[in-house]
Length: 250
Image 1 (cartoon, rainbow, N blue to C red):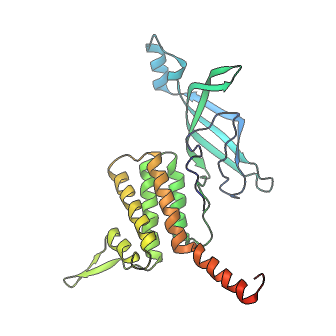
Image 2: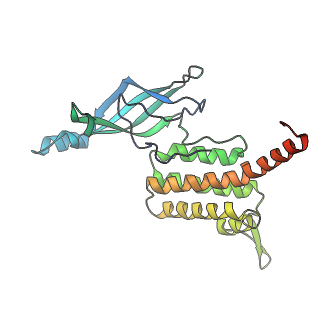
Image 3: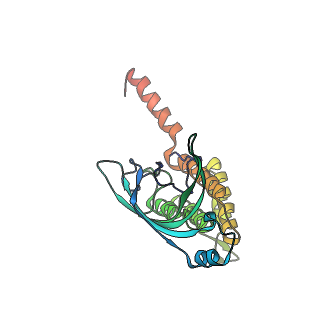
């Protein structure tokens, strides 16, 4: 699993390629169909344009729809996009210099696009919550953070961590903190990452999360998933022993 937090997950500019991954084949990249882009100015933007004497194009607020197509010749999935667009100055080249350019900020993809690959070893319930976070990422960072937190709950369930405890003869639900602590007995490295994700998700329930907070949560989640389900170190140790025993390729 690789997550590149330096990739542009905020906007696209017509005519400039991006490297957003196709959610269907997870091999190709999405190519925006420029002819499919349709925009409509918001009522608030129209009112502002009529009332302000010093109005400038940078104040324009529009909604857009567009279609993207996977460039994998064996896939060619169609992706539909809805979002907001504004105009701002963008450097074109040394001859043109800066020019007013449309910036398109997606809010919704159908089907939702993945921000990183999810290996087959990951349990279905965990994968479902991660993909739910992908769908929410573009429109609501706080809701996205909560979805990532829910994936931590699913991980604890998959690892058969007890959901309840006995207090004075009565069964009570355990907090996520308690479940992560129990998971940490066998998997301390993963537990630290999961606990950090829990705090990010909690903050999303009471305040705003920004894109860097979500990137932090995804990086921590990937680390935990690799420790809990992929375990590259164990696999490589087993492969080494097998090759050594055979004194040749496995």
